[in-house]
Length: 374
Image (cartoon, rainbow, N blue to C red; front, side, top):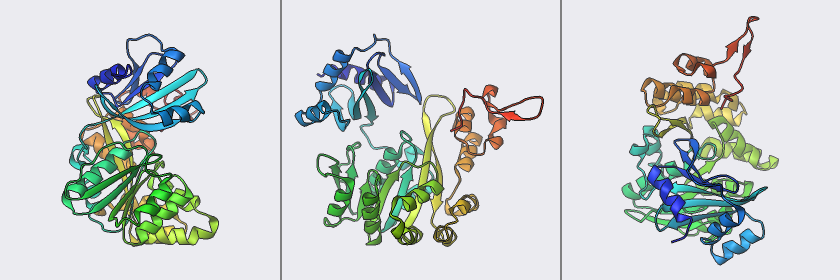
């Protein structure tokens, strides 16, 4: 057993989402969104490097020795499966281990909006799941793949960096390919996938113009494409895709989005009301003729109004979803307040009044510096 497995076993026993190891501090666990140290001494540089080296392949060791970061999956004999990032910083090496549950969670267990399940019924087009790092995008996509795997007979090709959840083929065939191990890039992975008779292609991250372009081509040619972007709203997602492609392709990109983008699901993870977990809260955009026209006429700033009025189609703004979750008492109102865009509507629910803006004698408003707006 690798020595690092002891920390990973402790983390999984405690129910943490991540284990952080860095020089100069004790090991840390991410518990329900908060970082907490375990009772252990500060890690020394040579000690931590030896822990990490034990679990690296020869090729990974060579890459890390050259100064490159590493992303890979690791199966601990004691603690389960992890997505790993290993890096160097000013005081030495560091590593983050994201715990991957043994079983793929269902859409129902994640309590995602019902419309997310209906998105799996489409046969072609693009669905984007977005959010900042650590908001559960990969978990949502894994639940969608599992739903497809159980309910339809498809050839599903999943391109990941690295492979996280493992999907045994059920009614569908699921082919999982890992960046750096099986494919040199996401763009090349999509190009190859289109020659492999796919029905569904999952792209782990639309991180560059070439990948976005290839994913668009796949969606336009009769495939259902699922992908992620690090964007924090539906409007920002659409703007990012348009801005990522060359200027001369701008009109073509807008046309693609208007015709082939099916939906954007943007999510945040909010602490549950009991403080013992986190719940995904989602903003949802479903493509309509009205939204397509706003994209083509470059009036994306008006899209939030369409989301607000589109509840019957499954659409919702993030603030609407947060308020609904507070009303249902499923999330911590203080944590929800930090994610809200228009915070005034949330102020009456906040229990920690130090989070609220202060009004001085002149009537001007100041925002507390200890709690930055999310």
